[in-house]
Amino acid sequence: MIAYLAPEKFLPDLLEELKYVKSVHGNLVLTDGPLQNPVWAQNIWLDAQIIPFESITQAAKALKALGKLWAPYTIENHRRAQLIQDQLPKLRPRVINFLDPLPDNNLGAWMLLDKNTLLASPTTNSPFPLGDVQFNEDKKNPPSRAYLKLWELFTVYGIKPKKGQRVVDFGSCPGGWTWVLQTVGCEVVSIDRAPLEPHIAALPGVKFMKTNAFNVKPEDIGAIDWFFSDIICYPEKLLELVQNWQASGLCSNFVCTIKFQGKTDYETLKKFLALENVRIQHLHHNKHEVTVWIKAPSSS
Ligand SMILES: C[S@@+](CC[C@H](N)C(=O)[O-])C[C@H]1O[C@@H](n2cnc3c(N)ncnc32)[C@H](O)[C@@H]1O
Image (cartoon, rainbow, N blue to C red):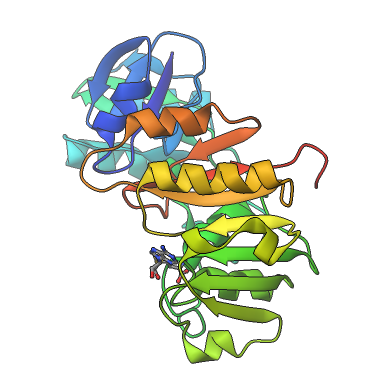
């Protein structure tokens, strides 16, 4: 069986897209079909097994027989779960630096379905406990926490422009994404209706345009290697902007945030999912929004 853990608050979104649902435990959805690729899963338990047990020691033994390192997911019986976890090898916090290699130990995950039943998967799809990606944050330079979305995309998913590439950053104020893009050596055309923080605007390689992103034509900017957008706008409008740029032939790599207000706009999300070479994921650092990336097959 395969189980999918929804990020906090997004269980309804995960349930909307998952097939073969068998049961739901807190934010964890157990399925009995083949592996799916949901937008709204922050951790996938690839080999979930149900294991009855009598004692805490027996539960810990069963887990140790299956795998080495385990992250617990608890929704009830917290004390009992803690006593089991205490008998397992210690799981140290996994906090990494931007662009560090990922921790290479595979992580299992487990939970108590009730006092005497484990749901355990010795393999998961993330080297971070329950998909909780943690960075040693930079509290000094970036002017907003939005930079963590790009840090996660670049470090965990390996989606990153190369040094010297020309990129556009739409909806860039106060400048977190522009800062990240500048730090990896890009030439950044940074566009927002509101001004950038002065220390970001002054960085070498950053050119700021104070204007409405939807009035900027691709020909005004010319050829770019990557299109970035964190604009707050209706998903439908963002799709139009991406498709305009795709049609122009002036850019083939795209990273953007689809932001939802109130209810998730599944209809437009489906249209994004239908784009060629697209991947869409609710990143750990996303709020009620998802990150889209489209990478030209030839670019590395
Ligand atoms: C979430 S903030 C972006 C944060 C930014 N990525 C960062 O790292 O600091 C969204 C931005 O979209 C901008 N925005 C909204 N509509 C816009 C438009 N039509 N044209 C340009 N910018 C727009 C807002 O001014 C706001 O600064």
